[in-house]
Figure 1: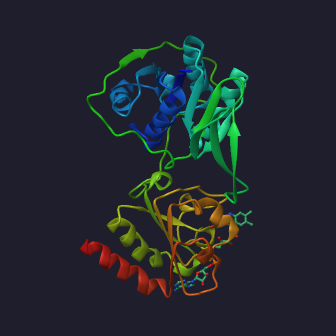
Figure 2 (figure 1 turned 90 degrees about the vertical axis):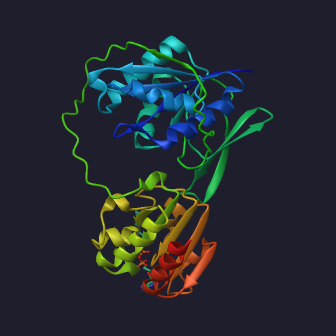
Length: 321
Ligand code: FAD
């Protein structure tokens, strides 16, 4: 049965995040030939609507208000609920990002519906769509079928292939007025750390360092390799605790969960808490001088050796390509 699906487009630093396009692809699947309407919330963001259409949205609904310039749970939920009340969707898709993780339960409770979060795959089953999601820190997967109410999911970045961008796609862009009031949080200023290069949670290639990197300077060869591969640098908590790098780079159970195409773990032992954040990467390469290191149990390719020899060699070879 054709469904009406609402997909939240998420902006960072004024640009749409890739996960927005992945959410459209998920929405298309669930819509079963119905309509996918993208929702953009913010201040002066209408210019982003075309990109959502080029990636497959049939229509874009824009909610603009100067109080929505920065994300607040109150403001965004009021805006999104205004759209829901007007549209009465059959399904909703958000990205499983910090914003999506924060906002989706709030919206689900307001709509009095369930939520399947952190979806990594969608298949058609006999009783409806089957949503796959990791459980027990990625050690197992469960499959969920929604039998009643609104189909509400969040999709893990880098798992659902976005549709091919097609600038000839067209669609209506409309604005909805939402009454944004009584906000309990007002963001006055956002101070961001200067971040280098590619966003870790959406990177296709990650070169991660652990305590084996031994110092902040030890991360330099990893940064070079990441740059050559157009990727991002990540780290284990061991490396962050030792002050070799910032906690914003931490991957794992208490850090970021990543699913790049290629994950190169350098001097990381492979503690279960680290694996929870990266074991679903498509290809894992481990470099460790200890042949018994647990990281080799999840690695597709392993280099037993000194990372300070192996990493520059890899950089040199990749530079030639
Ligand atoms: P180590 O375990 O010390 O491993 C270093 C590795 O480097 C060793 O295997 C060694 O053989 C190798 N090595 C050394 N020198 C070289 C060299 N020159 N060349 C090649 N290899 C070399 N950890 C996370 O990563 N992320 C989390 O989110 C996280 N959350 C946690 C939550 C809780 C509640 C707890 C209790 C722990 C958590 N941890 C987390 C910590 C985790 O248990 C490990 O302590 C941590 O992952 C170890 O980091 P490491 O692999 O860098 O260091």
